[in-house]
Length: 463
Image (tube, rainbow, N blue to C red; front, side, top):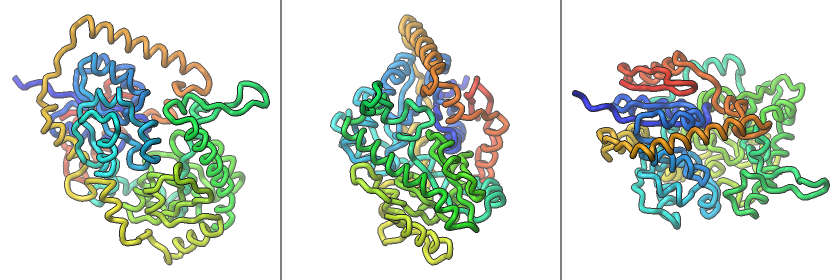
C-alpha cells in the first residue's frame, strides 16, 4: 500500500501579491508527491486543526505569529518559513525589531531566503538559533522570469486594450492610509488637543522609529497624493494608473484623481501584468521596482523627501531617481520618448543576484520543493500528538477563531470580513484551475494535477 502523501500548507494573506506565486509552488509540490492545502491565511488558521499533520510554510516570523506557531507545533505540524518583506526592508536593527521574534523563529525548522543578502540577515540575528537556511529565491520571482512571464500574456493584452499607453503610480502607504484605520501607525489622541498616539500596529517598533516612520510616510503620502492631478495634466495623452498597496484605503486616491478622466485607480490581480504593460513605473521604495528591473521596465523613484533610516535602498538604487516634481516630469518624458530606459550603472546585475537567487536555472519553487524533499519532509510520518494535547489545542483554535470573529464585528478592525475580502476576494475552483492550466502551458508541466475545494476560501492541489 502506498504511504499517505505529506501535506504542505500554503497560507495566502494578500491575494493580488501572493496567490499566483504560491499556486505555482503548490503545483510543483503536488507534482513531487505532496498534498497541498492553499487558501486565505485567516481561514487556514480557523480550520488548521482539521488538516492532516504536515508542513506549514509561514510568510513571516513576527511576535504576532507566536500564538499560531505554538498551536501548529502542538497539533503536530512542522513549520518552515521565509520572510515576505525581507527583500525590501528597513535598516537591520529596525528590521529585527519589527520582523523577527526569537520565540517564533525558534519554532521554525527551516528557512528559505530570497538571496544571500537576507540569508546573511537571518544568520546575524542576535537570537538566531542555527536554523538551516536554504538560499532558494522566492516563487514571486519565478513569475517574472522569461520562461514563465508569458503566463500573463492574456492579462497584458487586456490591460493594453483598456488603458493604451500608461504610466503606473505605485503607492505604499499602508502605515498612514490603511484600509483598516486601526492599522495606521498613529491614532487620534484620546483627548481633544492632545498628541497623536502610537497604535497597536507599532507594537514591534522602537517608539522613536514608529513616530519618525509615520511622519516620513505621511510627508511622502501628501506629495504622492498631490502628484496625481499633476501627472494627469502634464501627460494628457497618457493614462495614469494609480495602483495602491493592497493594505491601503483606495478611496483617497480616487478623490485625488478628481474629475481627471485619464486617471484610473486599480488594484486588480497580480501587479506583474501591469508592470509588463506599463510604459513607466513611478514609486518610492517599492518591491515593484525590483520586479520592474527584472522585467526590463523603466522605474523612477520619486523622492521629494528622504530619510536614510526610513527609505528602502534596493528599489531606489535600481531606479532613476527624481527629487522634485520637475525632475520627475523631465525623466518621465525622457522614458516615454524612448531617450531613457532601465537604469544601468554597471552594478545592477550583481546587486540583483545578491538579493535574489533563481533568476536563472531551476525555478525558486523547484528549489524549495527539492529542499523539502532532501530534508525528508515528503516521506516523513508526522507523529500524532497525545490526545489530551490535541483536544486542548483544538479548543484553543476554536477560542482564537471566536475571538477573531468577534473582533471583526468592530468597525475598522483588522479582522473585519470587509478587510479580509479586500485582501483575499472570493475566487473559484474554475478560476484557480485555469491558472494551473496556464502554468502548465508555459512550462510544459502539471498535466496530472487536480484541484478541489476544501472549504470556504481553502483549496487542495494534488496529483
